[in-house]
Amino acid sequence: MTNLLIYPILLPFATAVGSLLLWRRPALQQTLSLIGSAGHLAACLFLLAAVVQDGIQVLAVGNWPAPYGISLVADHLSVLMLMVTGILGTATALYARGEMAISLRSQGFHALFQVLIGGISGAFLTGDLFNLYVWFEVILMASFGLIIWGQGRAQFVGAVRYVVINLLATLLFLLGLALLYGLTGTLNMAHLHQQIMTQESHGLVTAVAFMFMAAFGIKAGMFPLFFWLPASYHTPPIAISALFAGMLTKVGVYALIRTFSLVFLHDTATTHAVLLVAAGLTMVTGVLGAAAQNEFRRILSFHIISQVGYMLLGLALWTPLALAGAVFYLVHHMIVKANLFLVSGLSRDCSGTLELPAMGGLYGAKPFLAVLFFIPAFSLAGFPPLSGFWAKLLVIQSSLEAEHYTVAAVAVLVGLMTVYSMVKIWIEAFWKPSPDFGPDQRAIVPSAWKIAPVCALALITLCIGIGAEPVYQLADTAARELMAPQVYVRAVLGGAGP
Image 1: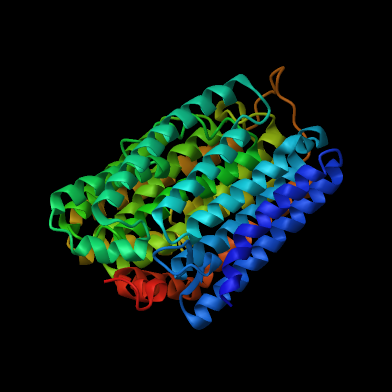
Image 2: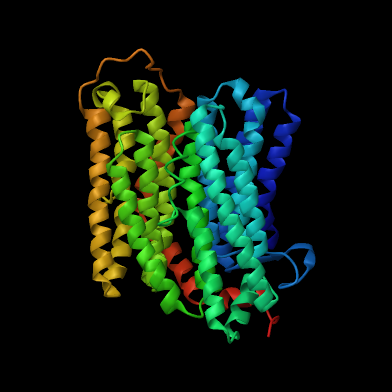
């Protein structure tokens, strides 16, 4: 059963190689990419079933035992993230089939796309920090290639900002790795959990922890390190920006949750207090930035930041309910945010623009599109019984139980401001009369390739909201594993370690 861990990584890279071999056959490239994405989703679901049935799965690559060899580890948090990765990978591959011309799709898009999916899967499954760094670099290279797709000036500007700030994160990550290895002699996360607890220089370990917090915070879009995100996520084609919005910042959030629930537990009073302040400021700055925008994807980009704050809040509170809320929020937000970006693409097809003042009349002209927008938008805002309501409820309830009333009030106010942004898009794009098209605006009819994944993701959002109990049970199990890291350590090391 442990061999299942290799397939979510192996299948995307094999598909990428196959796509390169079919360089001159774009139609076959497209078919292979769709088959590879569906196969990746199936592999993730099989691994999810194995973890639910048998507990944490560990694969020692090359039969080198931990902490000396490379370990792949799948617990409930990992497999939930993988499952959503598979869903979003398949959905965006379908959407890209309808969005991009064959000439563009044949120019390496599928290879980069599959490498990105493989890199994200590797980051979720790795059991040591050095390989997490390697997977981050794979993600960075593939995402840079995708973000400049189409070669527009705005894309190059956004890509430069994206790469420069992520290189800073890489530098901080590498420095942190060097210091941590010098202190402990290991980078295996399970082994680090044991070694750090025996360190006498807690102040130095805390300083290293803050380096990791900054590095992962940049990738997550945490305050004050988020400024690169709204400058870049609105520039590439819709399918690419949807995948970025759903996945990339969540890899950073996942890394923060993993390291600050497994590795850096020596001084939670300090580290988690800083995370608590950062979470509140991330929520506030993100939602205020969104309120000031008048372009569909820019509003959504700023709301990525504000919603990351809720996830960080669950980690910072450090209770089982708060962590369950953070995991539930991750699952909900990845699906909803990617779907909103896809809906923005359909709206652009129907109106010819993404500038809200130039949009209008979509409710009367395309009522089905209005429904497809309403479901993820008001789930993001936290309307019951949609998935966002339960996610916000868990986080806010845990804040109240921990007697952090100020941050609970901030979470509620940010939710109300999110409602304002979604209502703003609704009024401008859907409700108000349609303005006359300008000379550069051209409406087209969205294809079934674009509509189908939007419908599927909206249906998943409804299912998570109406049938929240199974997802909550998985999130609660993941939270309890995170709160009891010795379970993870035993699964990876067995009798190894001090």
